[in-house]
Image (cartoon, rainbow, N blue to C red; front, side, top):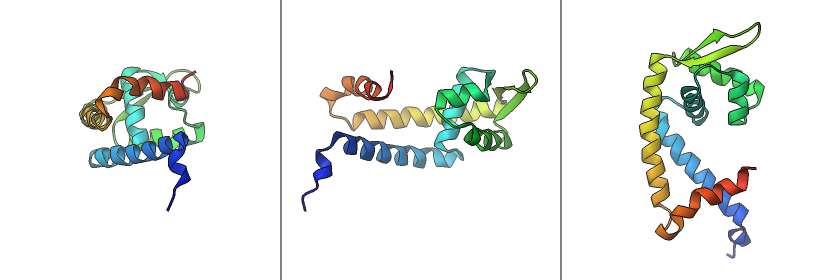
Length: 137
């Protein structure tokens, strides 16, 4: 059967993204984390004191979805919230959060190496710039 979708770059990109996200999710699942959890831990770890609003903008997550995400991470003992002003809190990783982030970073490094090595060598240097060109302003 002829598949006309295989000629469409957008379709290939969607299939590649879906396959890679499934692989990454499987690799972090033993850590008890979801992809959104890892993303949040990475951003909070790099920006101690970030607010939920700032985190949501950085991760392109709707405000309504931030509450369960942060509650899940906090309930796992990985995050603390500290009052910042009348309505905002700053977000900080706990000691356990820092340790879990270190585990996640090791998993990420292994995954990223695996991902890049799936790309033919002549194209590896162009992969990240090409992907960034599709979504960054």
